[in-house]
Image (cartoon, rainbow, N blue to C red; front, side, top):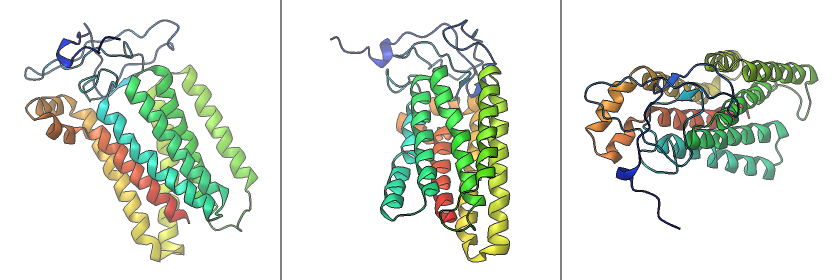
Amino acid sequence: MSAPPSASAWPRPPVHHPPGRRRGPGPAPGRERLRPRAKRRSAMAPAVDRAGYWGPTTSTLDWCEENYAVSFYIAEFWNTVSNLIMILPPLYGAVQTFNDGLEKRYLAAYLGVTVVGLGSWCFHMTLQYEMQLLDELPMIYSCCVFVYCLYECFKVKNSINYPLIFLLVLFSLIVTVVYLRWKEPVFHQVMYGVLVSSLVLRSVYIVTWVYPWLRGLGYTSLGIFLLGFLLWNIDNIFCEFLRTLRASMPPVVGAVTQLHAWWHILTGLGSYLHILFRY
C-alpha cells in the first residue's frame, strides 16, 4: 500500500463551512447533500482546511478547529483526542462502582459519559452526520440518567422511581424524533440546556439546604462546567481571531487555543465530579 499523502500535498476543497457555525438544517446523508457555504476568513488567516480520509463534511456543524490540519485520518485532531477524558476516567469509575456493589444508576451514569465520549470522538474524527447523532443524542440520554440519579439521591437504596423514569424516557424519545426530523442544532442545544438547568437547580438546593458540607465539591463541579461552556462560546464567536492567532504560533502552542477541546476536557471533568457529588 502506498503511504498517505503528506500534509503539504493534501488537496484543498473548493468550499468550506463556517467554523463553529450551523450549516443549517437539511436532509440526512444518503439523500440530498447539504449545500455548503463559503467560509469567511480574515486577510491574515490562511485557508488551512484540507480534504481528508472521511471525505466531504456532511454534519450540520463544523467547529473552529482546522480540518485535517494534523492528520489525514482525523478531521479535527484536538477535538477528537480531548474526548479521552470522557472515556477513560468514567470507565474506571464504572469498574469501581461495580466492584464496590453500588447502585446500578451510578454505573449507568459513568457508562453514559463514556458513550458520549466515544460518540464525540467519532463525530470530530469524521465530521459525518451519522456520527454527529452518535455524539448529540447520547448527550440527552446520559443527562437524563444524571437527572434521575440526582433527584433520587435521598431515596431508599435500590428503590426505583418508575414515574420519573417514564417522564425521562418520554422526554428522550420526543427530543430524538423531533431532532431527526428537524435537523436544527439549536433545538438540541436548548433541550440539553433544559436538562443541565434542572441539574444545577437541584445541586444548589442540595448544597444549600441538605448537605452544606458538599458545597465545595458541588460548586467546583458546577464552576468547571460553566468555564467549559464559556470557552465553547468564545470558540464559536471569535473563531476567525483564534484561527489567525494560531497561524502565528508553533503548532504545539497553537493547540492550547483549541477551546472546543478545552470544553471537552472541562465538561468531562465536571461530569465526573458531579457523579461523585451524587454519592
